[in-house]
Image (cartoon, rainbow, N blue to C red; front, side, top):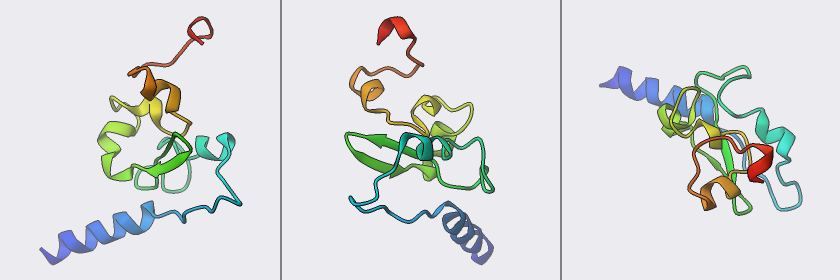
Length: 96
């Protein structure tokens, strides 16, 4: 049990990312770095998605939001439009 607790604490530590203030909001380019496919902790690090002006760290749902997950299309981006349209696939230029 202690080993599992230590493992979970280490995962949470790796996935932690400081919140941003309204004075220093996330940019689209910064969000792209946290889609679960790159970076020093891509296997255990944060996975961010933005929706309606807020940024969420969804690392606990890595199986859903990480590479190959059903909702990976939302990771590392502003997903507001996709969520509003109940769309879980990439949009092409024609559908915009």
